[in-house]
Amino acid sequence: MQHLNGKMMCVIDTETTGLDPRYHEIWQIAIIPLTSKLVMDKEHMPFYIMIKPEHPEYIDWDIPVFKKNKPKIMDAMTRGYERETAVDMLIEWIERLNLPMAKYGSKQCKIEPLGQNYGFDKGFIEQWMTVDRYQEYFDYHYRDTMQAALYLNDQASFHAEKVPFSKVNLSWLCKELGVDNPDAHDALCDCIATAECYRKMCLKGLF
Image (tube, rainbow, N blue to C red; front, side):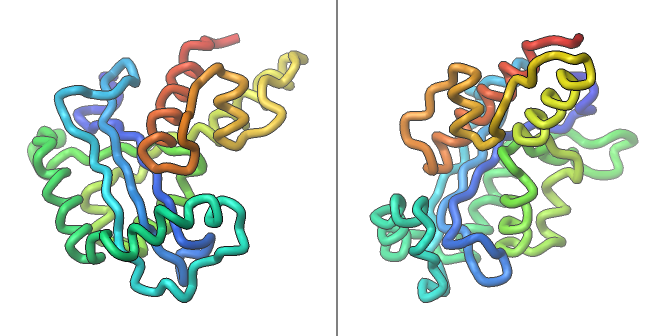
């Protein structure tokens, strides 16, 4: 992908204790580097850790997905990394990617994220590692399978074709695109499924 200009596309997913980054926290995060063919880059290990919530009293147990993940969240509360330790681990992992210098050698290239509803994850990641540190390592351009599905629906409708996705959540995209996700709402499994959904969307071609 020459248009990335040295940046590395990585699929990113988080699991959180609620829906509002002002109060809720990341307890699990996964980042998988991708090749130009949008498959896992085997030269780099994924980043995949649990983070200990600092405010477990804010966990929103009323939301079904958080009830499903309760055993994993409880595990994160006892065995997860402290917040700053986890941030340091992420920065060290990014530096080991050895991304090239940007054009004119003024600064190093960044990660270009791919996610499912990535605007949600981005808000939590910025709150976790601070906006300044996020902007230092992650590009402001990103891909989003939810937005891609909405675009494909708009494109099909514009050409008087049947829209391909009646829903745009990850489980529905996986169903429609024939992508297996054996452990939905686990950050690593959702990353793998998101990358494969995006790859299949790109393979659809143009009208």
